[in-house]
Length: 140
Image (cartoon, rainbow, N blue to C red):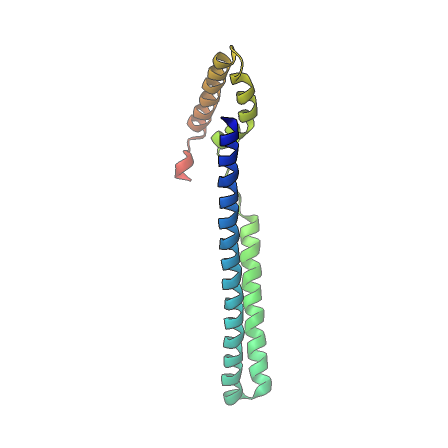
């Protein structure tokens, strides 16, 4: 029984990894195309500015625009880094921490009772935290 379950889990994991690798590859290709398009747009802007203001002024305008874009990206990066993170959901953390212990305890005769008591304790902790913090996980 557990062999079939293991092969099912392995096939699900390999399918997920393959799909994620495909998606990441497509995102990387899109980023490369966007970078090339940006280069062509800068060349076209330089050509347009060269016809109007001369080569040196056009180069300075393009360089100034790139510096301005870099400063904006840097400021957005600082803002994102300093923004406080949302708290992790307690239920997911508790479930991941308690899974090995629950599997071990369920194999014994008294394990069912202990597992039920532990589940009630975890549920009480989650509900108590939600009541006393005044927020719901879905409202963030």
